[in-house]
Structure formats: structure tokens, C-alpha cells
Length: 361
Image 1: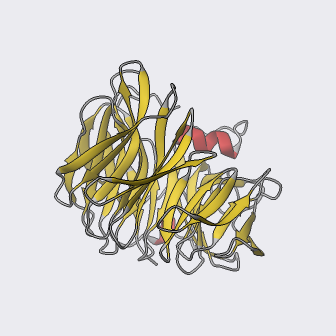
Image 2: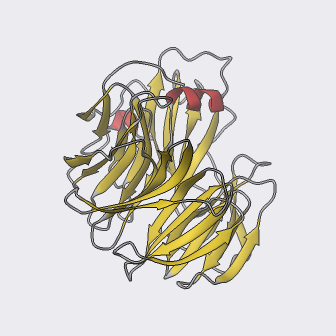
Image 3: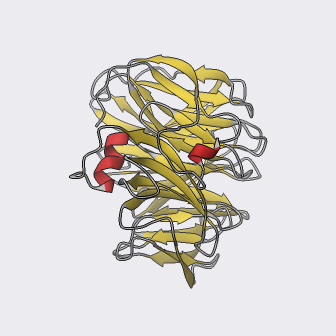
């Protein structure tokens, strides 16, 4: 865990990535310059990033000591990368994930403290950075609760998943009224694709309609966490073959897997991935020193739907990398939290102290 006491910031990479950071020239020494916007924090982490159809991007996380004085933040940047506002919810709120609705509002899910218990928390923040409403999600029996997923559909309905002593998915209207609440077997990551609600976790995937009825259900065992792509397919990272991703169609039937080729060798690993509407796969991981990449650090790469490498960029180099560290250990040191791709093909990578934005290409 990175313990450096330095100014917490969100940094957005603007303009084209220089050749030194592209697949043609792979030296990690040349990292795209970043424009830094201070969030006024000592340290912290970006937990979630979301983007809308207009190219706006939002990041959520915390600053301060995560074990004591947690100060949550949500920041929004316009398509040029300029941060237009930062919202700081009060109290002990810690955001976990966020999403845009169709009207430019930002939806935030996470947790907060109420006396000695932890409860789920849901916020709706307007496009101008003002709090529209907040809701608390308590378990139906004594214990703790935290919300891990949030999504919105075209009718402005809002869906939130929360887990702890029990797990639920809740639907709210645009003004925060609860429409329905359904029990689930675990906390879920939520996505709305083609009018259907996908609830995904390491144990399985369920497809629901707008009333909460389950249309399809897939149970998983021994694999990585399931991920729903923008194309409506479900992708599961294999625990047996590091470069293989299992794929399921919109009815959760298995189809041909994707084998990532060329760029992921024995010296590289990845822990996070996202899939765009065209079935292209974006991965975030760590690498050792190789003939193509000197030193060690964190990289992001794009593969097409057949698994062929399209490009890769250094996300973060490390000068003090040692051969005794595994790629997974290096990824933890660097603090990569996630990789996310927008509908426009822009790729975002979060680390402990900032958010990187890679141009569409």
C-alpha cells in the first residue's frame, strides 16, 4: 500500500499519446505529461470512474487516512479534461462506484457510518455538482451493509446493489422513491445494456427486467469476477489460463472465448479489464523488464475482439522495481484500481493518486 504523504490529485492526460508511449516504441521512461488538478487531500485513492455520451468523465474516491478521517470526493471533468467541479459529501461517506444517468446527473453508491454500524449509501448529484438527494440502505437484520453497484436506464430509473449481512438490488425512481427491492446472493456490479439490467459478481450473473424479475441466470465457479461489456456480452477472466477470457452471449450461453495474443507474455499479468461496444478488450496490469519494455511498471493495452493486440501504453513506470516482486505485487504497489473505456473509445486508468485519460484511437 502506498503510504506517501503527497498532494492527492486527479490528473487527466490530454492530447495524443506520444510515440514513446505507444506500441511502436515501448520505453516506460516516456510517460504522457499530465495536467494536475489538486483535490486538496493528503493522500487517498480513486475508486471509480464513469463517462457519459458527451465525453464528460467523473471520478469518485476518498482522501485522508482511510482508517480514520475519510473525506470522500466526487469530481467531474468536461471533454477537454478540465475539472469543472468537485463535490465533497459530509460525514463518513466513502464512495465505491458511480455512473451517469441519461440527463447528466451522477449517481454514487458506497457506504457510511451510522453510530457503530455501516450502512449502504446512495447519492444523486446534479450535472452542476449539487446534491439532489441521498438515501441510506440498511440490512433487514442486524449487521453491516455497503453498496457496490449503481446504474441507470433510459427511463431514468436507478438501480443499486448492496451487500453485507444480506445482499439486495434496489430500484429507485429518478426522485429517489424506492420502486422495488430484491434479495440476491451477493453484492453485485450493475450494468444496463439494451434495456436489461445485468447483475454480475464472482459467483454468477443474472439478467433482470425493469420489474426485478430474473430473465436469465448463470452460476460461476473457479473463475474470476464476471464483467458485462458494452456489447451486452458477459466476460469472465479465466483462473486457469491467464490470457483467456470466457465469453457468454446476451442469454448467458457460452460462445467462443477470447485468447489475448502477443502482448501478454510470461513477464506480464493483468488484474482489471473492460470491454467496449465493439468487443475490444482493454486490460490494466503490471510488467517486468523485457526486450520491449525496460524496467517495470503498470501498463494498459487494447486487444480486438479476436484477441489481437492493437496498442499498449505505459500507465505508470517504477524505478525501484525488483525482480523478486510478482506482477500482481507490483500492481498493488502502483495502486491501479480499474480500467474503464467510454462509448467513444477513451480509456481511463485510476491509480492511488490520480486518474489517467488516454485519447481514443
